[in-house]
Length: 92
Image (cartoon, rainbow, N blue to C red; front, side, top):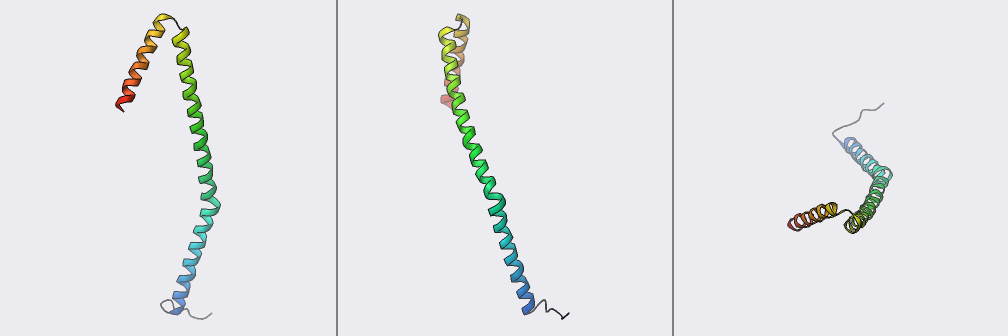
């Protein structure tokens, strides 16, 4: 086995080869591992946003039903809570 001149031309070639291997590995990891994970996170985020929107609509429906058909004291408390929520929402 011949001696390798680590500080000369052979060392530079090894450094370039190592750097190229690092870049190739980084690209592989980004393509194979990170890309699909980012896609999955984006899909889960979209599903959560849709679910939040449906939940907010359902909450509004239930509040309306309670205001219309709930007992008197419940309606008063619900109106007070909704008013307080709107006031706090305007401040934020």
